[in-house]
Length: 93
Image 1 (cartoon, helix red, strand yellow):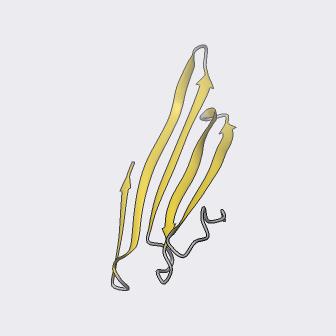
Image 2 (image 1 turned 60 degrees about the horizontal axis):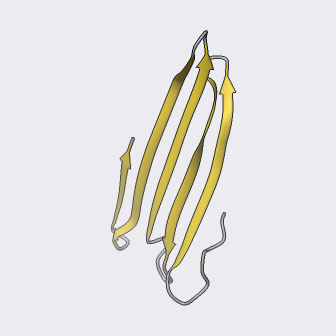
């Protein structure tokens, strides 16, 4: 878990990036990134909101370089849309 960006009495922000690298004989070799940004407010668990982004692209050589696989998504998580009653998650992919 990444360290909060600030330590004051107000809200903290936590940014967590992670690289993705890998491959297989089916989809080729590729990489991407997984990253999240969360706002942490005192008294609100687990966080006020979180944005998460993931992207993966692979390339495979079969005479000509080509993109063999792509996946992208953006997630918005609001765990306390109505405090302790309603959670909202929106995912675009």
